[in-house]
Image (cartoon, rainbow, N blue to C red):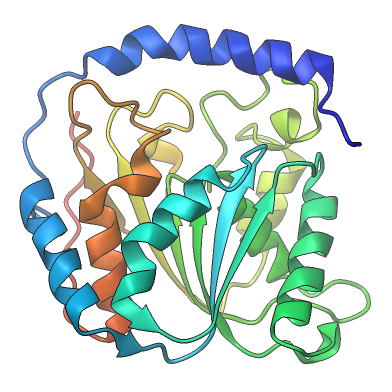
Length: 266
């Protein structure tokens, strides 16, 4: 039986305890003028799409964050999967403690789910939460053997593309240092060629990642205010506004988010 490091559990417990108070009362924020759908309207739109699902253009891969036993990926699937039809692959990385190990698991399990070898994985779309997005970006870079994940579109939810506010916090696993904004890992992702479409979402007042880090430099960020009483980061994966926008894009419908993307509020 695989157990999680005691140091990691203690660190995570301390971090979550520190964030819980902040998560109970969010400052009042105006809606995003570029992405202003309400949660009620987003729920109704998801129900509309679920009543008439549309076929996916390509397989869809849904990724949880590292250390997450599929809580985030399951919530994403509950919102998006009824709206579409086709092959969906869900992965979690609960017992992966390095980005390299997570990358290898991603390539291995996607290939197995699609009944191909790792040298012939077809183009896929990806929805990723938090560190799952970094795993996908890493897997999209060919390794020495020429193996990679051919991504056509990636939808990222609260992903620390430019590092994280908590990057470098001693969590007892390598990803803590890797998520520092100045880490070699983040710099490698910045420098890598990216040929796929990247659509980035975040909620405001994210004390874990930081919405200012949730899109690569120069990429639009589609942000929404966090409702009072919710953690900005840990409930972003179930936000109906974000899920409805992603579902629309997967179905080939006009998204609720409309360019130009509004800047983050000060």
